[in-house]
Structures are given as C-alpha cells and as structure tokens.
Image (cartoon, rainbow over all chains, first blue to last red):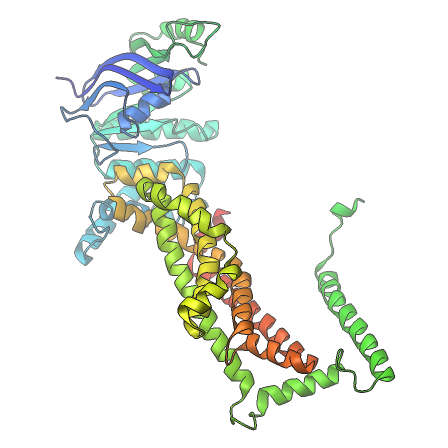
Amino acid sequence: MSFVSVRNLYQKYGNRPILERVNFEAGEGEFVSIVGASGCGKSTFLRLLLAQEIPSKGVISIAGAEPAKEPSLDRGVVFQRYSVFPHRTVLQNLVAVFAMKNSLGMLSRSEKKDAENAAMTALERIGLAHMKDQYPSALSGGMQQRLAIAQALLAKPKILLLDEPFGALDPGTTANMHDFLLELHDETKMSVFMVTHDLEEGFKLGNRLLVFDKPRWDPDFPDAYGATITFDLDTNQDKSTIDHIRETSNVQ
Amino acid sequence: MRWINRKPDHVSQIILALLSFMIILVVYTLTSQARLAVNPSDKLMPAISKIIETAGRLIFEPDKRSGEILFWKDSLVSLVRICIGIIIAGVSGLFFGMAIGMIPYIRAALSPLVKVISVVPPLALLPIMFIALGLGETSKITLIVIGVTPFIIRDLIARVDEIPVEQIVKAQTLGANTFVIAKSVVLPQIMPRLVSAIRLSLGPAWLFLIAAEAVAAEAGLGYRIFLVRRYLAMDVILTYVIWISFLAFVMDWVLRKTSENLWPWMESKS
C-alpha cells in the first residue's frame, strides 16, 4: 500500500470534464512536481489532493486513511498568495498553528509559552526572527512564502501541497527559495506535491515529475475531454526527456 | 500644465478650504443685513451676532419653566437614542453578516430575506412602529436599527466574501473548526470593516433619529428644531443644526481614530 494513492480519478465542472482516469501512487517522502499547460487541471488535481474539492469519481487516499471530505491537519498547503494571515504578526502567524487546533482557538499560558518557543525556533531556522513583530504586509514576497511554508510544516502534515508557491516572486528570490525548499525537504523528509508552470523548476526540485495534458483533443470541442497524467518520470534519470515534454505538452 | 496635474501646496490647500466657508459666511451676512435693513424684525435670516447670542442663551441658561437647560437635555436624549440604535445595529449586523457570509445553509435561509428588507424604505415603517411599539424610546431606536442593520449586514457579507478563500483553506489545514475560523480568521479582519460600515451608517442613523423625533417626542434635537419651526426661530434652528453636524463629525472622527489605533495592519495593507 503506497503512501499516497489516487485511483481512477475523474473531476467534472458541470458537463465539462477537467480530469479523467488519473491513476497515481507515491511513496512517503517523495517530492512530486506537477507541470502542465494552463487549464490542464494541475491545480484542480492539487485541490483534490487537498480535499478542497471532492472528485466526481475515484478515490484519493493518504496514508491509508479514508478519502477526506474537507481540508484537515493531514494536508499542509502553501498557495501562490494569501497563505499567511494579514492581521497577525509573523510570530502570531506561527503561534496560530498551535492555537487553531484547539476547539476554542485558545492556548493556556504554558501552552502559549511552548508555542512561542517553537515558533521562534522555526523563525530562526527560516531567517525571519528579526521580523517577528512585523505584519506580513511589511515582508517581501519571498519572506512571506518562507513564513507560509514554515507555518504549514509546523503543523506536521502528512503531505505538503504547494500551488505555484514561487509564481509571484522575482527570479533571484525564486532561486533562493528553491535552495530553501530543498534543504527543508532533506531535513523533514516530508512528502511534497508542487504544482508549477515552469518545467525547469519541476525538474530541479522534484525527484518525480508528473505532466498533465489532454491525451485526446477535439478541435471543434476543446472542452470535450479532460486531462490526465501523460508523463510520470524520475527526474534523476530522464533529463533528456525535457525537450520531448516541451514539444508535446506545450509547457515552458 | 494640465489642470489634473496641478496640485495645491499645503498652505494653499488650507486657504482654499477656508475660502469656501468664508464665501458662504459673507454671502449669508450680506443677505441677512440687506433683509434686516428693510425689515428689522425679519426672522428668516437672523444676523450672525443674533445667532451667537441665542446659542449662548441656549447653552448656558436654564429653561424658565422646568429649570433644565433644554439644549443639553435634548443632546443627551438624542445621543442616547442614536448610540443604543447604532450599538444594536452594529452587534446584530456583525453577527448576521458573519453567519450569512460564512455558512452556506444560513446564507440560503436568510440572504433573500435581508435583500427584501433592505429595499423597504425605513421611514415608511415609522407609523407601524409608533402603532406597534408606542411613542416612547423603543420605536425611535427600532427605526434606527431597522434602517441601518440591513446595510451593515449586506456590507459585511461582501467583506466576508472578499477574504481570500486561501486563508480559509489554510486555517482548515491547521485544524481550525468553524468557530475558530470565525473567531480567529474572519472576525479580526471584519472588525475594521464593521467600523467603516457604521461610519457610513451614521448619516442615515441621524436622519432616522431626527425624523422619528420630529413626529413624536418630548425631547431631543430633532424634536426641538421641529417645535421651534412654528415660531420661525431660525436662530435656534441654526444653532441646533450646527451642533448636530458637530456631533456627527465627532462620532465619525472617534470611530476613525479607534479603527486606526486598533488595527494598524489595515493601513499598511491597502
């Protein structure tokens, strides 16, 4: 039984098929990059993994659990934007990880102390300790994403889902963030799923790469068929295929 | 240089602002003088000195019959009415706005009702309230509440909808239940919006208050100006109008400052 298992997954919006016949297995600790042209359903796939959407057909199971009906502590997520809480300071954003689990959203005094210590350790790890009392709006885009990743990891999810996490950053910052994310993955051995529109980024970060595309295409009805996984590669061995993917799947 | 690109400096901004007030004051004074020259007992446009004299009498001298200073009594009575009305409207607007905005089942049940209620002109309901609730305080406060709450609810629903869904999903992945999301994600972000919705409602709230007091009351700012209208006491009316405007301005200013102090992250966000 693999850690993440996706069986015969279909997703439709109204009559429009988005994904069809998606089958996929991943082991624990894999870093899976998901690429594809825009509108090919890669973000839909991520939302299905997140349980933000329920599939029309098929099953997603994580760590052998029942298919989830809504997002929960099992799944950590970082979006391209809006992943941190703007009304909380940097430190409070991390303390929230411990407080929100409580059914009243509150911490006792000693719990609060522990949470702040854990948050400070995490802030030092990501190099944001000096910003602890700032609001997110005072942080650069890269800092905000680092905070968002730290926030997600602090909750100790079973899988971490990243939806174009570096899409809004400038190229220099993105390169730093790549190193940061790879280091974190080495340290935590977390299972990661990252959606990106950048094939190079997918190859560089993932040890496995999924390409989503429409295998069947009707020029009169572009929406007639959904997308599925057209390539599933080990990024350490298949570097040569990058050009082939570029030609056939219109991703950059 | 185009007019859209010419900007007054700080000093000329102040001068220009004062200028518009001065012009109105001068035009009023000249017209008033001209009218008083023809008819010294003209009541329609009393001289500014007369208004100041009346204001002094209203503010400092007690009423001969009751021994109370009616000006302060009216102010107190009206302020209590409008404040209670605004507080009830704000609390219920916050509660229903968040509940409808966050929970699809409550939205399905109440959103159409709120839409229908908000198109009913509140003043048309005033007679119903006087009949149903009597002529006392309840009917006046109810008018303010009914007049203002639907707007606050609808505004807050829109503000809840504006919170990025990413934040709501993120909170769920951190294990938050509906109550915690309401308390820790939505409420803190909606509070500054509530204050600005209340600020926008102050105008209508004063309108409803003065209308209700004009129809039936025993004291209050609106009651007084409609009472002395019978004697063409423009000096009294103008004093009260200036005072009401001042009170409205102060209430708005207090709310704005409160918002700026309590939620500093709002400023840097926009």
